[in-house]
Length: 84
Image (cartoon, rainbow, N blue to C red; front, side):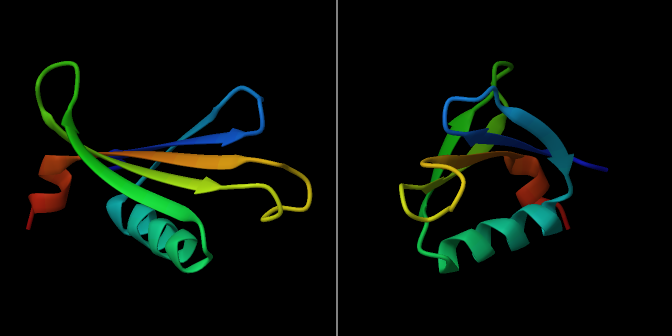
């Protein structure tokens, strides 16, 4: 099951979409957090009213050699975080 959606935005290019499992998403968010990226997590709801966590990871100028701005947006259903 791949419940997490990842949207990657590089400069002003169209976003790239990828699905992944929760473990992979957690590892990527933690790795980005330790790499001096601006990491924020928001709790909200999706269009149908279900719980949703948004993890926003942003790298500013100077972090990447081939891009000025890189942003990762993870959409994580809340029920995925609370499943045993």
